[in-house]
Amino acid sequence: MITSGWPEERPALEPRVDGWFDQENEAFLEPFARPGASVLEVGSWLGKSAIWFARRVGTEGCVWAVDHFLGDLEILKTRQAREIPTLWEQFVSNCWDYRGTIRPIKMSSSEALPLLAAGGAKPNLIYVDGAHDYENAFRDIMLSCLLWPTATIAGDDLAMPTVKDAAMNAAFCLRRRLLPSPGGRCFRL
Image 1: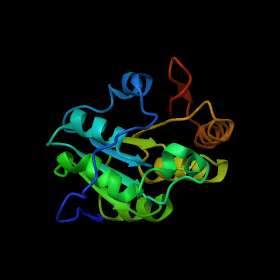
Image 2: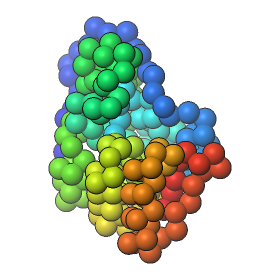
Image 3: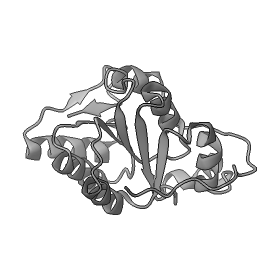
C-alpha cells in the first residue's frame, strides 16, 4: 500500500487547523464516517477534515489523506494561506496525534487513486475536496466512482460553479443521482 508516511519528529510548528470543513459537512458525512470505516480523502489542505474523519473512524478505521500539498492557486493568493510555512509541515503538525489512523499520501490524486486501488484499498467513503477547477474536480469524482463503484462518493464546494458542473456531469455520466446537503454546500452521489 502506498503512503508517504510520517517523519520521525513532529515539525516545530504550532497546530493550526483552519479550513472550510464545518458543521454542515460534519452533519452530512456523519452517517458514512462510522467507527471502523475506511475513508479516502482527496484534498487535505491542513488536515481539518482528516482529523474529523480520524476521530469518527477511530483506531480500527483508516483515513487515506491524498494531497500534493502544493496548495490551490486561488487559495494561495489569500493572506491567510501565505502565512502557512509549508502545507505539508503544517498538515503533519496538525495531524500528528492521529498517526495511527491517518495515512498521508503526498502526490496528486490522478497518481494516487489508481495506486491505492491497485494496492487493494477499499474505502467506504470517498470525500472529494481537491482541485476546484472543472477538469480536475470531474476527473477526481469519475475516477473515484470507477475505481470504487460501491463506495459512497461525497464532496465539498457544490456552491462553486465549476465543482457543481463537474459533480452534475459526473452524476449524469455515471447514471447516479446528485444529492446536495441541506445547505447546498456538500454533495453525495
